[in-house]
Structures are given as C-alpha cells and as structure tokens.
Image (cartoon, rainbow, N blue to C red; front, top):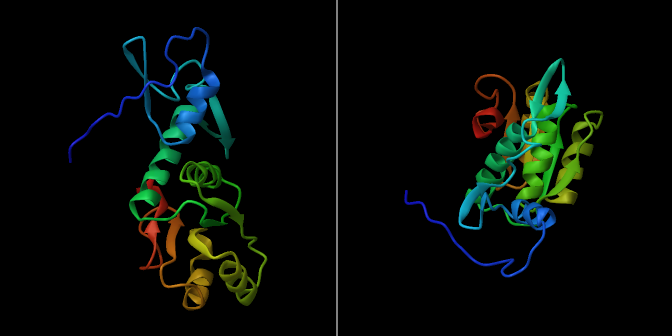
Amino acid sequence: GSRFQVLAPVARGRKGEYLDLFRQLQAQGYARVRVNGTVHALGEGALASRVALVHAGESTDFRTLARRAQALAAWLAARGVPCGAHLGHYLRNSPAYLECFVGGGLAGLVHANLNYRYLDHELAQLCCDLDVRVLVYERGFAARVATIRAALPAETLYLENGAGEPLNAFATSLQRVL
C-alpha cells in the first residue's frame, strides 16, 4: 500500500514548451510531472474541463475521460495483460467504447472492433484468430458471449458494460473498473 514517485530529468537546461513531451509521458502511464519544483497532474489544465464527448444528451469532459481510461489501463496492467494483446470491443457506440479504446491504448493493447452482426461461430473464430485477451461487451450481448466462451482461451478476461452486476458470473463490471 505504499506510494512512491520516480523522478528523472527529461528536459533539463532547456527553455520552451513541452506539450508533446507531456502527452507522450501521459500516454506511457505517467500521472504527474514536476516543473520548476512544482508537481502538476498530467491531463489537467485548460482543456481538462472541456467537453470530450456527448452521448444521449450527457457530456463527459476530458478530465473524466482520462481518469476512467487510466483506471482501465491500471486494471489491465494489474491482471498482467501484455502489451500488444488484443482488446475486443463488442460494444455499440457509447462513452464506454471510447473509454475502452483510450484505456486499452494507454495499456499498450490493440483495438479490435467486433461487430454485433457476426454469427456466434464467426464471433468466436474472429476472437480466436485475433487472440483477443480481453473482451468488453454490452450487457445486451451477455447471452451471446456466454455461448462463445467455451471456444475462447481460458485466460480471456471479460468486462460487461451495463448497470448493476454482470449477467455473466465470469465477467467483471466495466463500470466498477472505471
């Protein structure tokens, strides 16, 4: 339960703005930077409170999107999902889709869009061919995921997006992770 900070100089003795460097550090999972002795949270600032997306009349700001995506990236890392693994998105357009896309990217995972029109055997075959290690799906697709689960590798992780507890006992609630 201990917290620590790793400090390493990345831009010493140079003047100027380092927005690109800060974006790279944030993409690598760093949460803070120290500039001239002051610690700043990455992702904070003028853009943090601006609207990142609007869905069904609800808006999400960049700060919230970043926080939720970072939570997913940390959850994936804690479960040992390797960089370069595939994250299957079996979701309709929603904030969860973008949060998983960004969070998976922060964790170094590869996005794999899985269309809801696939038949069961096509969906299972695609997941196997892509070696999908994490499958994020809508609650409405829970029965379908339960049907194809036996055809997927045993180490596959499942995240169900929806209110309340997942319908599938083998899945984890995406909302609880975020």
